[in-house]
Length: 181
Image (cartoon, rainbow, N blue to C red):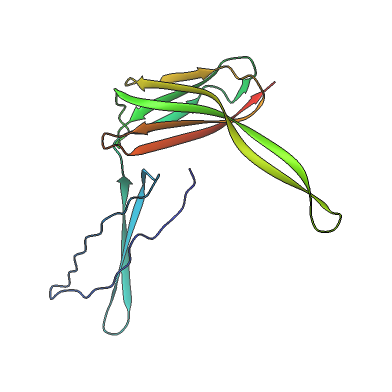
């Protein structure tokens, strides 16, 4: 997944007589973002207009189950078994057993069309789609399990693994790979 930053809250408030301010912030649902780092920055301004600031970071986990993927090869071959390992862990990275993982493997399809634009100019328009090539499901033990399939055509593929935590919040891991032949 891509890395990005997003502001969740910003506020101003005066300090009390002891120089303390307490704030509670509810973290809104982040959609498919199951984990990340929260950065808190606080700046205090004195009556002369001078600022002093400090920050602290904490790890955020919206679920209690995460799935990881690992390729067995750098490049796979058409007609030969392609295998990925997967494992389910808790927020501390400790493997857990008994959590079902769903995996799907898709082939990238790119089509091109010559489309007439203004005048007599033709422009190439590319369309990308993903076609399902295989699926796996299983309940990983406290060690990695394997998802294998035999690719029929060469190209760019991606594998997507989804696992749900005990509260029902899903976490998704993806990995791209190549098949030659």
